[in-house]
Figure 1 (cartoon, rainbow, N blue to C red):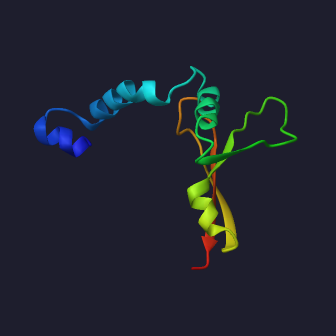
Figure 2 (tube, rainbow, N blue to C red):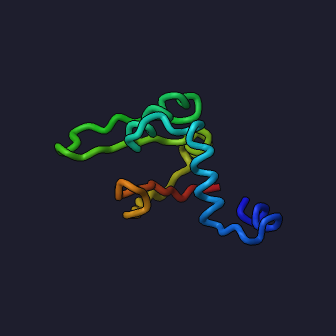
Length: 107
């Protein structure tokens, strides 16, 4: 998208395109001012496409939101032979740690 906008308006910076897109698209995905609450509400609307998991024994003060993509996980059923976890930090405005589970599969 940035390339398309800059082709027509070379003076526009990538950050400006991103900021405008975020501002204009919020009505489609934002459900609450709190990021986790908003994400949980959005995922609840997408239960045909995602499984929302309910973790147990969560330490006090910790917030967790877990989900899986059905169209990705479904075809991999029975084919996973290795699972790993990766994490990032400071990639969002709440400074939450973001974890992803990655799997290697056979064919």
